[in-house]
Image 1 (tube, rainbow, N blue to C red):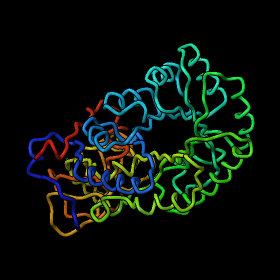
Image 2: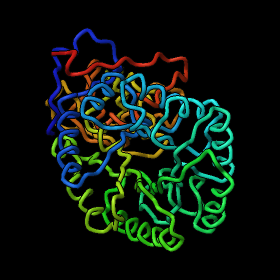
Image 3: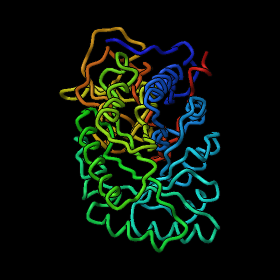
Image 4: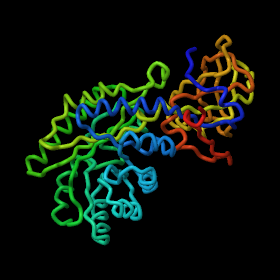
Length: 386
């Protein structure tokens, strides 16, 4: 089994489980993003919900990316990381008043608005703060992302955004709202999308929606097509960097931008997914009636995706080169759903072996919990373990 390049000697003495970030992989990913976007003058905002580890954010900020936030806490984290407020977009279907005011006071680039009531509240709060808020309308294009139903966001039945049937009513609101300025349209159809035809369908729908605004002589300065590009969970060693070239080329070839319009993206998983790994230790190997269980000291409190989405993560035994055997790889949490993989082949495993749960840079550390009163794992980077 081909395994990742880990400084195993440096792991000695570190309490498991812990998160490990290979910042060299992250820097290469960011370099590829910048190379591709500079060709087309595209603007990328890192989706903060994927990871807010301070060292990871430091490298992302150094690469010049903006931030896509879905809470006031994320807005503050982006500002604390040194990301310019002029590069911060703020989405989310349920923005609290204090979160909106935080964005207003910092003069963030744009609020992605998801309903008429939200638009009205932003106008009211902007008036109270003597501000004019830049807003983009988040429109549901009703495009299927062909992904897990929990992470599909662009259909009419999803809670996010404004449906096409509401669009005329929303546009009509702006005549009476003096403290909001419509500067953009925002779209997001889902996450972990690897089929580029989904993005082509999004482009076609955005072109159609743009025509509605052109017909009413409404100028839209910015188009934001969200993120959603997936990563290769099966082969992170072979594909540490997603196919950004094909991704950005879809929008270059299929999206019709108006003169002086800018195009924005909100990439999260594709930026940080492959740089992160959850390192765990084998507590026990238990012989069942018809199978073996490799019981780890990491559980769904540390990486919830397999339990929540039935998601696959490649699992590697970093200490063993023995013949592969089949295990159910499970955690210690007092729930049957605390399972990372069933009937999984990996090198012969024994108590004390280090196990790497790969591609955990997105939605790993950020979703950790203290269920069962477990301690939150610490995080280390390749820069720190040189």
